[in-house]
Length: 80
Image (cartoon, rainbow, N blue to C red; front, side):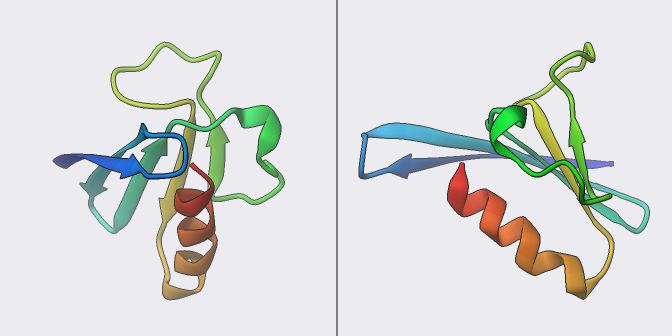
């Protein structure tokens, strides 16, 4: 598994947007600092990690397995 943390400065409120990227087999996993309440968890690629003990960044996990799911992942990254 490859693990790459990112810290992106948000110019609007001067606070960092932190996300974590992991590559595992055919999955690209992005963990983000987002409130799960503010995210539509109906999509099968999005998972709430807030009640799960886990190492890493954020309470929202996005598993991108196909090109079709990239657009949704990009929207969530921008929201973070």
